[in-house]
Image (cartoon, rainbow, N blue to C red; front, side, top):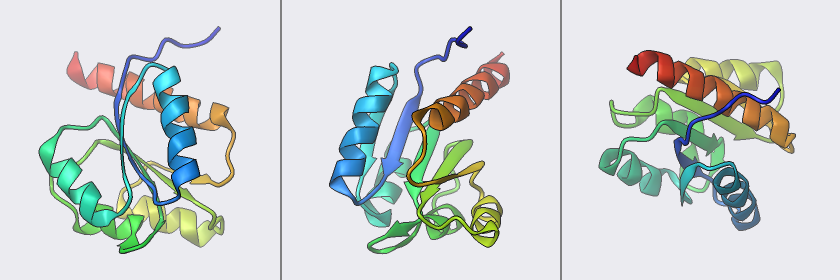
Length: 130
């Protein structure tokens, strides 16, 4: 039985246009509100302007890394952050966790992996708001 996931406000930080388009379509089809930025500078602006439930960020960005975005970003950031990367070494996953990411998705990933992580985020946010 599939778990009901509430609509989440999701910010994507990804500079590859096809990946952004695919992720937006997938997430919107799942009922989420989605916005995308292409780099750290745009992401910082978006993070400062709106409250997001989930951040999904690529690690390799044109103006830095997703790790730097979380480490040097605004204090107000989503409670649930997911890193995406083609880098899959244990050290990369550990670096993502140290920076504040909850999960480290290795590209290419199965949509079911992302859906499971968003279900976890939805559950945590629901519990936090009760």
